[in-house]
Image (cartoon, rainbow, N blue to C red; front, top):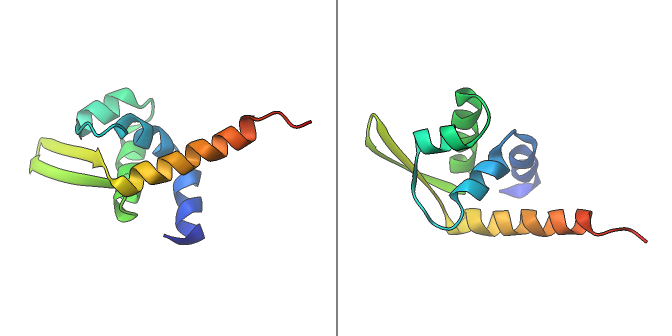
Length: 94
């Protein structure tokens, strides 16, 4: 992925939220994701494409109206590292 990919993912709106929503292994339909994430359809679509391009989510098109997404093991690992970074920043500095 490289540092550019990390910056791209963390810099795009709602990518981490989408990973969090998908974490835990449950497969979600596109419409479920769109409904759960408070943003535009365009942002959801672009964020999912970015996450797919980096191997963090998988897309399964059952039919034109039934598109499902699932976080990958790589996506779970990425999300865990993001959570660790959040913990570093939430620790008080003395």
